[in-house]
Length: 282
Image (cartoon, rainbow, N blue to C red; front, side):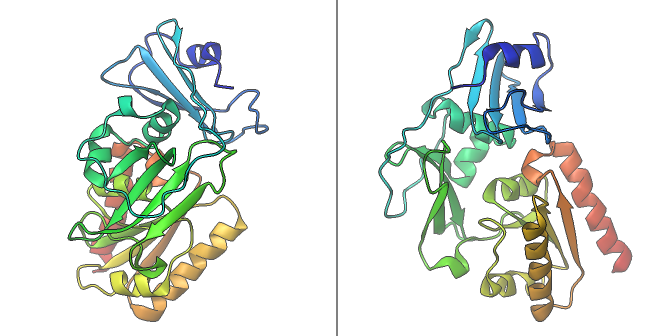
């Protein structure tokens, strides 16, 4: 079932300014939500519209005026892509199911960012595709994300060269931010930073060595979601691995909010704070 239109309209009533808003999902089918995992976005180009997505139950929904934008469930059975998929040159939200649009918009991802970074909906596999490239634009890998909890696995990947070098760095600057996923890395890059996206909380030593030893990288920020003790342990392990290859300042930033869930200006302020730490120590 989709998120009720009445709930969306009550939480984000008419006249609410454009932006992204977070709430605890009342009567969430996946259980009690105490971390405000229900995201409702009011688009700037259509402030009468509401697009909602819950990261707790992965249901979606929306409202436009008094009409419901129904949450479209992805089918349980879908074909699985076996080779890399060429991203379309331009991506339009109208070509995606509302679940994909809601997920992207809740992460602050625009249509322009989708086209720029190779994010798109694959009709054949019925999944959202994240494209990881190197600096030259060569596709290193793609991660395909299910849009419904009944479709398993939630993610699967197609690698060109193997998992050791499955993603490249986005953006520029002396501060390298290591993020859990591509969406957060995109947001960091768009905020003026340099980001290395992982695919989850696992980092291959070969990949870390290649990136952290570059002369243009002066310090590293490991930014993971502190979901549980396992994630915290993985962050510590990443820091330890970096220390094997580079004598550079390394910080950890463990928070309930990943870069993709932070407003652009606030994200810039956080990056600037760590840049200033770099200047003060340099």
